[in-house]
Image (cartoon, rainbow, N blue to C red; front, side, top):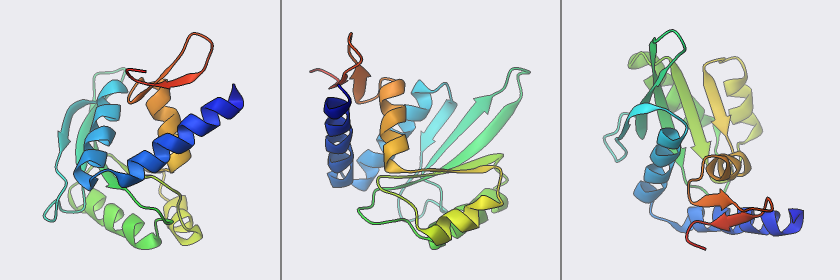
Length: 152
């Protein structure tokens, strides 16, 4: 089972690296909706101000926290530049949280830059696929714990 699930995760990652960047942003937006975020809006494009997706989280007290998401569909590690860009947009546009999602991994410099930022979360490709499966986006967990593509 573990071998099967690892293969499905790898295939999903490879597929996600090949989709159009706007499609990848749409998948990230769909995941946020499935996770309970509200007012999810896909912004992406050359004039997105460093934010591809905007969403809001409502806490147990009813307080709304806006989140900025940058989605990087890359086949190589995401570098510090993108962490810095997202942090700039996060501060400039006064978001409560920021999320940087990629299809692969982050460079040591990117991880270091994000380390002192408690409201910035880095999501690498493996974690991203785990979240997709956990929330039933693109993937679902079968009766025996096996991962399946939706529709399969």
